Amino acid sequence: MRKVRTGEVVRTSMDHTAVVETVWKQRHRIYRKQMRRVTRFYVHDPMDQCRVGDTVRIQETRPISKTKHWRLMDILHRRQVAEVRPIELETDLDAEITGQAEEAEETAVTQAADDEGDSEE
Picture 1 (spheres, one colour):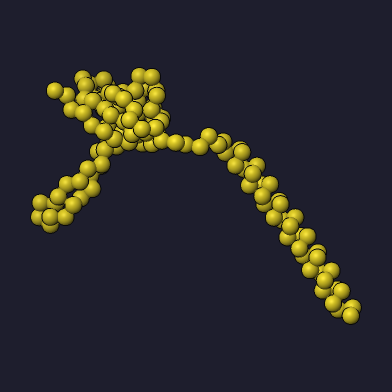
Picture 2 (cartoon, one colour):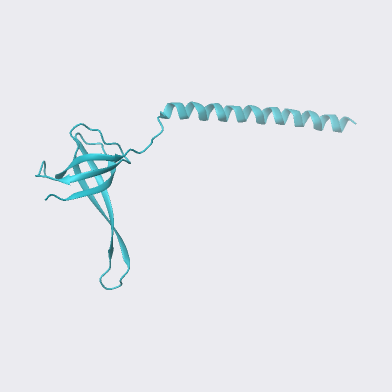
């Protein structure tokens, strides 16, 4: 019987490999306080189908490399990620900043005109 674990993908930058974190709690022997323990597994993902944030089920297997002893069984839940490129965000931000600058100039001009009108009276 091989060990089966469930965890969250935290890194997929390597080829055919994903890093999966499993979080579990353990009671301290002396202080009896719950401690949060994190274990990282290097998982063989032959088709590179994992994405960061996915919840996956992994199974222990023969050593595939020096650190990789687990394989991907299935993806339980996909994390929803917005498909936005940094360039789009930058252009939206620039437009918003320039729009605010133009509005500020218009407000300053109208206030100055109001002030001049009040001083003439």
